[in-house]
Length: 348
Image (tube, rainbow, N blue to C red):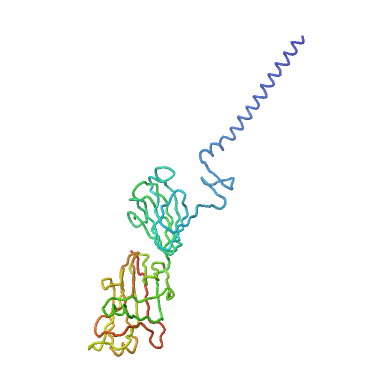
């Protein structure tokens, strides 16, 4: 009898256990049914939210975003760890974009990769595609490179192609101010000794200026080289160049012409006569040349390439010869005795 009671209790315990498990399974199944749409939605859309529980896009960042910031003063090739590149060099350099077919992290294209580049330096920066690849600057079939002047900014994005035009110039902001640069000086310049001999032999002599003579230099297309006494061209284009100087002879002149001819020249990439790209001659009576300071003006409009050097020079051209020395000096009631200016009219 006792055994029968124990068996009966065991049967009831097993049945109760089965009933409880069945109820739990039903609840679990119901929970999964409720949960499954959200699980599948998350899997299908794979939306990620940072600092938000409701991402509205594939990636939603509800807050600030930080990318890699690098400074470089020299040429370099951009890589996978670069994002925002600032060029702060004082001499021209090149940033080369990575090759599309060999870029990290793996071979293939890098569609969508973005680079932001700012020229915070004082020299021109070239942005170049890698090898035979091209940059789409929306001017045609693509270019191998483009120039970024001081204060310029560019954003580039990989198009996902592995040859031809592989990068797109999405944003390009170059200088917004036209290039106008001018020097004006007041101190007297005197050519004596070897410089005077060369002057009389029609070998152009540099008309010197100093960085402190700068009146204006805006636009970023030219810079003054103080050591070499020349304008350095940073951006290719068409330029208007002007200069003047007040000439005077120290002492009497030699000859029978009763006048002397003095040339004021604009020279490129050197100071020899063969380097002259613009010139003008002032024919001055001997007595005026000796007693006064006479202005000679020169100007020209020419195409110049980045890297060109532009000088203002002076030399004897014709007529009677100065005998002691020559000078560039300020006339009475004036302050400035020479000026040298550049204006960029257009780019290529």
